[in-house]
Amino acid sequence: MLLVPGSAGRGDFDEGPLRLLLIDRQELFLEGLGQLLSPPRLRAAVVTATRSDSACRLATSGQVGMVICECGAEPESGLSLAARLAVDAPSVPVVLLGERGDERRLVEAFRAGVAGIFTKACIGEDLLRGVTAVLGGQRAMGVDLVPFALGEGLPGSRSGDDPLDALSPAEQRIFVMLGQALTVAEISAACGLSEKTVRNHAAGIYRKMGFKNQTQVVIRAARIGHENGQTPG
Image (cartoon, rainbow, N blue to C red; front, side, top):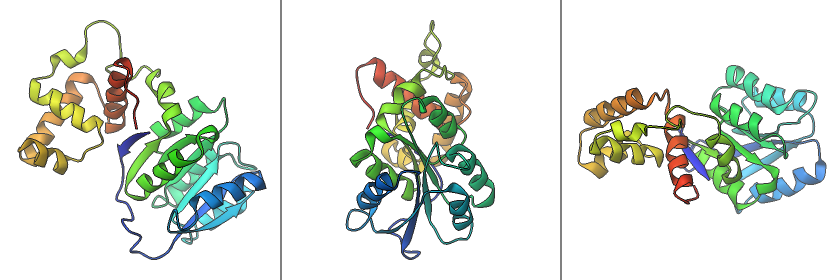
């Protein structure tokens, strides 16, 4: 699984019981997903819906803490619902699930800010860990979607001269740590540098490699691991 830093999470759910809203057209799939994410495996109450219109009203009412929705939801697709909630309920993270053939759309949604993306083929421990990571303030991509993200032609992935060669040894070390989804504070502590120095190095990395956000940094780092035969997560 690939993780990217995101917004502040819920920690140990100190804000009260977490309610997960699950949206899928197939009731049997909803039942299985609900069992996976219910106590004791996850400290959450599960609410299910087979239609995205009624679910959207619930999601914007302040009664749920996370939405997990299939791409093919009806009458409004999961992609459209995620875009709507980003405006109407920005504090509610959205995790999208897709079928085979939805991979590219899932990756595009992840780039647009969706909190997590997974295929239904990987429902299980990967999704459970991903949901837990999202609740902790990270963003998560299922391991089987990483190859699709790596093939998107991100800055720093072109053939020819390797942009990594332009980085100083300190920048290369910090680049690797950014790719592991570590925060500035964590990198500062690990390297014995001030947070200001880490931010300055990070700015140099972004400038030299053409990155716009840390999602691109993490995926570029994952590409390097992929090329070296390593699997994220």
